[in-house]
Image: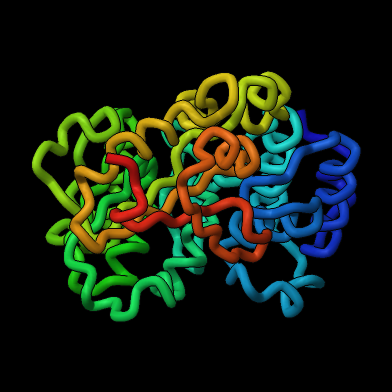
Length: 299
């Protein structure tokens, strides 16, 4: 329930931001779906709810709000605190690599270090972005990485694959919004099962990779996400094993495999000591995304 005193005493954008930060902090919210602190989350929810530019807060701080605007803000703050919904599910949007995507609780909230690598066209491992003719995004979810792949490699036809029919629906919506239906094909498939005979210059994947112990300890915000998009067995590597076992037959001779594996680098290297993983630098370090060439994968 909204605080009646807040309704009577808060009038400006600044007032509401201060109140939201206080409420979020008192509620012990977890931030990990686009922001990492109470202030940034409060600013995003406030600007989005008021239909203001997300990159322009200062000019509006002392603007007085209409009663219906104040009600809308207090309601979204309340839902964030009481329901522990990630902000992306409250606004039905998520931002990745500067691009907006529609999301809801049918898909995981997009967050992948692969997105920032695609902004650089996977240089220097891809010399010429125009040389990528075929690409696969395995475990596409909302379709965000498939779309970013199509934007990064202008000549590529991209297959976006997921086993969830709910995720497929969301991906189709995003592909349509970007006008990429002629280049991005959405396929419902359990891993590679429906991809017989298809080979790719590039395979990317941000698969489920959370280990069982970590799944059991997830904050409430993560429990709103599809569980199948998070957990991957006892050590978090079940789906990655499938990728490493089957990827070679779906790559061209000079093809590249790029996979995100969370905090599982040590476990992965111990499990596959013979594989020459190349660990890609991201803003968080060099232990979250690996690259393998087709020639380096096991038969």
